Length: 406
Image 1 (cartoon, rainbow, N blue to C red):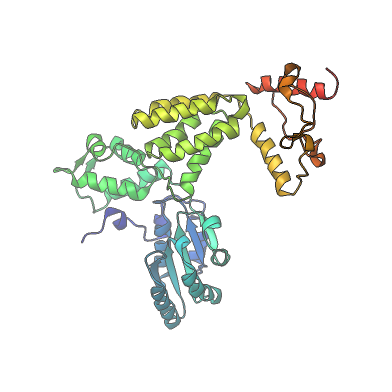
Image 2 (image 1 turned 135 degrees about the horizontal axis):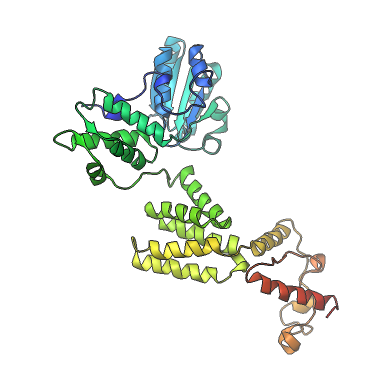
């Protein structure tokens, strides 16, 4: 069975690796390690298709050393035991392990002593953030290297190399089509190679143009990963953009989630934002968001984008206030720290001393509600913005009444 183009184009040396200029090149760390014929256990992490496996292969090729490939998910403890026995025979080897973040405890217990002794040098690879997802015992024995996303220029460079290679014989393709593939790839070189190869073999004359590419795929690929950091980065970008009142960025991140058809995550996060970041500055936003969500669910995609776009733009441009939930967090903190005290007798159930506010002018009467231990505690500090400006006026008037100023 013939290998896919992406494998055929895999770099043989670090010089062939695209991007990652912070790690590879003159006087860069990985280049110097290979130059000095010395490599240490490391974890390469970053998005799919940016060169983790390529770098591992290039290091192995240049060092010309004994190595084995394992996958932390699919390979068993027995497979790892075999690798360790081989390492003993060869007085050490490099173990390249994909999805290192999925290494279970049994395998970790077997691997750790070998890393400690230097019998095995590990090159781990993961799309997850190792600071969150990898066991600290493994992590402390490895150097962590983050791979940066490839730029469009890197993808174009890789595509041009493939076009000149013997693997796409007699291919005809113009620069516009190359740029379109790069754009559609979402900075994933593997995906770009796959798209180019499919386009090449889908013609009878080896002429690849924009129409052929669009028939194969017209939607750009982007990394979100619902179970990993990329997904939460998109949600974080959405919330911080709305909080920062950047309507264009807010629409961009919302559009990413819509393009992925992950409306559940989008609606949950927007619901949090409505109360965490907009709050009392525009309390109508909660019901308005609910109405937009109902409309989006009723009409479904693609029309759902219309109410979603409308409410996201409104939320981004709405006045912002976090005073209510910050005040509530302070109240919770008192509870968690045991600062509670007894409920005043006059507001306990059926107390004859309770003053019913509706019996007084303005439906207000001065009486103590907080426990004695907290009777002077202030949680809420209103902002002078949006609807909360009106709330602030009421709050300040009541405070003056309490102090006898009014």
